[in-house]
Length: 405
Image (cartoon, rainbow, N blue to C red; front, side, top):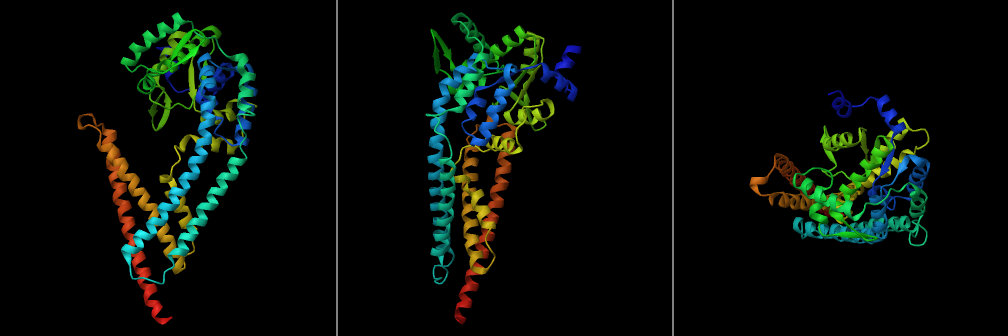
């Protein structure tokens, strides 16, 4: 019972500091590949942290293999993402201008004096300036095919890479993995659907991708048993086969903590990159980074795929920047209307996806999410109606004023 309490109860700050001082630090593949996403300054500071960690850092063979296999793919993805950003801006611009035309025609077809072309020109200017900002940021990025500081750092820390498993050892892991995944025993079972049938070749062995996380887990356990030290695992994988919710926070699955202790008699801690960097302030003397680095890492984790539908946020900000003279207020309302229309479309799409869930399998969480989306849709439709009413008033007022020109 004493051991169970020791591994499952929250740790004091002194206990955490002691574990950090003794621990082996293990980085996941996603942490290394994410370095290609960051700005030069952030990437540089994070690479310095990896160098400073020295012998306390250990890279499992599975992580090294996945990094080398996926490195060029990640670099290509970043190049494609840049092109997608520019395309997304053009889509958002066209959509905003279309909303202006459509809604103006539905409100007052006979209105002549309101300068819609001026509004559309201002929208063009705004989005073109946004594209220039993105192009400038991209021009500052290095050509990783010619000079790759991430790869160079990886080579320096490669002295810490663990050994690979034999074909016989891998076959045993695959058999165990089949049984574990049937029972949803972590980690790795969430990869079964997306990665089944995919593989990597290393020497004369075949690495089945759906068991990649399980192979990694086994290698971490083996290392802790040999070194007789606790492990701090840094990973940005937040799927349910690694983490569970605890009062709104993603924490390591208890099954992982229990299994790790049972097999190694050591403790296991897990952090995202952001959380790890925040904890270095308390537990490490020279692994610190600037606050803006932590902020960028957070934004990278929370900002998912970039697409034009997210431009309602940008449109809202642009709307707030307008002065409130009558003509500019009308322009601002059209911009806000475009934003609301995009949000309504997003909301309807999400509701359709939720509605696809089979009624017998609908969890309370799905039903609650659907209720929230319905409320959001209702509020958005109210907001749209309010904007249209204000536009009608402003346009009618403008028309009345024209009599006195």
